[in-house]
Image (cartoon, rainbow, N blue to C red; front, side, top):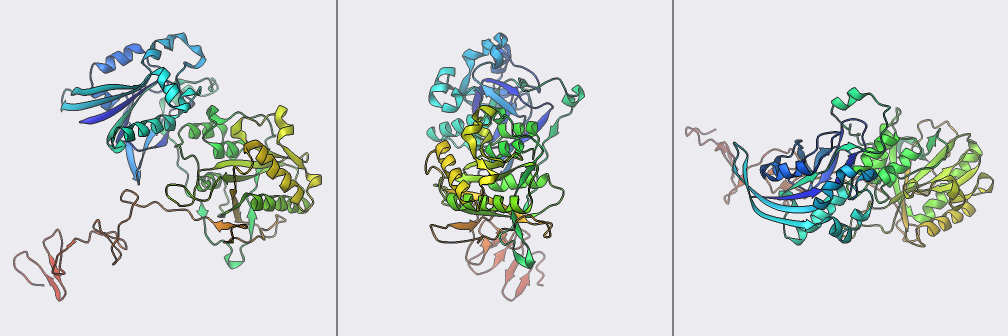
Length: 499
């Protein structure tokens, strides 16, 4: 018996080719029903309902790889979903009365012939109730993570383990209004996977052997112009918006990644990974978490020194991520749920607070984002205060209290780029500062069970990873091959020979 959650809505791909991205989820499997660059209609839904097995199979096979902990990854096309047809297409209105979420319980009776039967059927959400129950669906566009979040909530309410659920998505994968005709049509015939970026070299101590650290500067040839949030998503993808705004990654690629993000967004480590993947000269990075006031003060001190020693003739930005608190309320570990923005320094002398995701980066709003000018830098303290006031006016006073700063080793120590001279760590509450360490993934459902001897209770040695067998009461260890180890040596039970 399999629980199937079946989602029906409008959808459009935002990719210009058949490119697939890893989408994090907590399901047993994911089924999709539209072929690439095609639309679905009411008749397709009717045909699907005639054979319950199709809810399990889908039209396009999707492999859901178990990754680590509670999560798996399914490779899916970058799609934005909507409860309203994009552009008011009348041909797609017929599906509107079916939109929402359904719950089926399906039993596979006979594999050959694909014979399945319904054991239960329930409509969880209608078009209208989806808007009322979940705020994300009241937006013009939403993403996989919005659908999955509601599905997890429903599973918890019904006491269903989502890891045993098949998630079905019945939605068009036709072209969206983002696309144009300036691409080679043969590209559409070649499915390809998004190339995952390698982990950057983020280290805990980056000051040995005379290494000098400097602040990460996003130099750009782009003018500080208007910007619209990637895929019109204002609740996810803030880091990708900043990287794309400064030209670190292509806007189309950033848009594709945004709609495939999980609800957790992009951690500061992932932001560094993406940046480093675009560099030919690889660096070592150090990430510091500190108070917002101290971090902003040090950024403007750096900008002041930067402009004095190396007067810039180009635009650049300083990226940082802000947090409301230090730890995640559930795990009590370092939180990575925050908001990424930047300080933009224009070659004409103006200095701004830029938050591309918020849609407030446009010429008409420039006065509201202006912090000051290079001529006002001095020691940086005055503009730092102005910047903190600006952040308070944009997001609320004392909403964000902490921030992450990205440092890297100065590849050319003879250059005039200012060297970071601040302390890397400080345990005092007022001057809090900590070097962040990337948490490596663990196996066995994200939990590692060990006994006092350092061996994994699930049957593998932590040191070698080899199967260790089971220990008996007499202190002997019995292995699969029938051998029995004693303290005085080994004795084989095969053929009665003693070794």
